[in-house]
Length: 475
Image: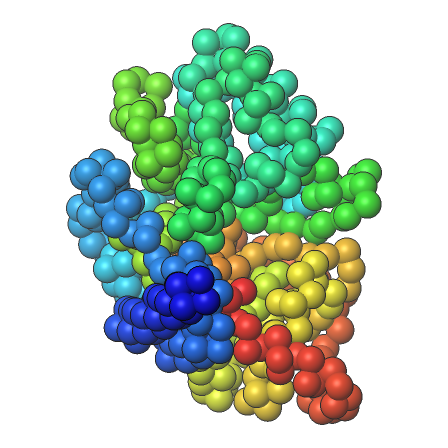
């Protein structure tokens, strides 16, 4: 019996060893980032079994092949013409960014749009519910979190009313985000007769392979002509009035005009990915949307599929184009080495680089991992402003008060490499100046982080932050 037990133990040890070797080899051959390779290989050899299991669950991007298989040619088609043909007046100053957008995005630049900032849930939710009430043909709603609180229940009632009057309604909620509430909003919507689905739903253990790949997009499209996007989920905390126990400041946008059709195409692709239903017919195919304003816009879908690294290269291109000022607002700031270098290089060129970050984050580990980056940025001339509580969840990038990037993505590894995100690039002097003034007002309410303050952090806090920084590939 002892001999047999010994053989079994030896066999298990050999299997674990071979699994660790296979995992390490896969990481060395498939992972692009040196830091991530070191982190995963180190974890695998430190904890051969647990490290290998974690790597295959969270370190391997499996959604790319699955996305290609499901799309089957039904995704957004390549841009039919260069953006300079749409906006020749932008050719001199913005030719580089227009060219990078043509190369990265499946969409061409769209003229004739109006983009309206909506600050916090009081403004955003009111406008969104009014648009839902005015829908005639279709409503497409995608969100990461859809809470079953007083705000979520209001949305459910309005969506149900639209469904009852003959509007085609589809609601897509992320499979993890839907679990933020004890009561599932998908269950409630289905009871109300509203077609809804969970993106990559969590059914353990068979769904663990895609557990780390989430749909973080926030999209509401009404009749293919008006849309809403930004960083705001559907939950009570985003409201300034009666936010509950966890108030959140945020920024959302209403978009009217032809570019809304791009948002609808992204939603239809995600819906087909999830349900295998192709949305077609008059309700979902927009022929011609009249111009609504002077803003040029383009959708920039990003995710671990064909749209991989669209956000990364867009940010790099925008930083390279900056001449006067760059403003970045993000709740989670863990950029990779390339983006850090681009920020510092822009500052060294004389560009005023302002980073507005929450003074107190809602994810402490991410906040700690971000702290070690502050010194090198401030030393090279970047300015870091700490936004006082309540937690600021807004996401925005401005270049020279003209080019605007808005949407769902954060400056962290999850948004840059794992999540399905949607951002919108906008070229507009009016929108740029208005948002630049809003950013200036936000800076006046914030505290400038000085190099002296950073250097005075205690050794214990620096060690804590440095240890958290080592976990960046897993955050």
